Length: 400
Image 1 (cartoon, rainbow, N blue to C red):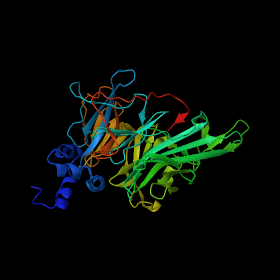
Image 2: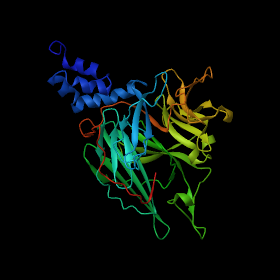
Image 3: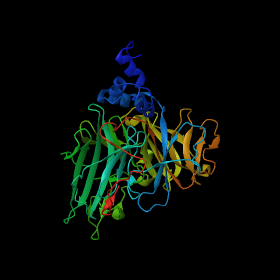
């Protein structure tokens, strides 16, 4: 068939297909294998993710199986299916990293950043490929606070891992070190732009990627020492929030500079652990909670960067029993966890609720939604059914 259809037409058609289908189609003929495996096609397929709405959206569920070192099973669930069940008959894939490693950010084009104290790695659960990153040469100490995130440079089609280290010095001053890992370059490098001395809201996940930039909830907090001198925060246990100074810290992956987006006035005095950034319908959004997980409101920035465009889209009463929001389905329903950790679909128009798990969650942790992609097809290592990482993690310092 390819003898009669122009290659560009074939590439355009194939670029809308899910990754797992494309991996199978590489076996059709040599020309298709070469096309699908080419960097140009992977770049086109990646950019189609933004144009495909919720198509191919998955919910990453993980279950601990009891193994001391590598005890996690991974279940990619169809986010728009009628039920999101993982029962005793479901067969999951082995997590390719040690159980003490953790996913430390939202997904970025279908990839997850996995981190422990001695290594970082990228993981694409859709095509079962991973990439263990080289050491960032950070000097880990108990006086340091670390922030890690995964972004994507849309101009160079390059994934970037951003590591920020804040360290409190002996004289009470602070220093920050920002290092970036480029997947295309395969190496770490430092940048001159200093990281703002903010208290970054921790939690899982704690940042989102949109408009070529990474976003964190931040607070212009201070650290109160024993002699009541105020310096910048580095130890989470000593942080005193400035209750009138929340904002969103932004890192531009193209220009590699930091900037700030102001929050709506009603959110600037909320404890940062009750705020979480999110992307809803292609817009930067903020989820407001109470007591960490009790969902209260959803704010959406209708025009990116325009502070006056913040709008409260939904409000929730405490007696509704809603916890962590996982995302929106194509039909407009919200998918979230209730206080019993059951997955629930909620229609904000009819106020109808549907239990999606029917009590079959079985020690599952629902991490995040993601779109299937071909990321790491060329740079990553294929994960076999029995493969695990040979890196043993240790604990040191404090991580975000």
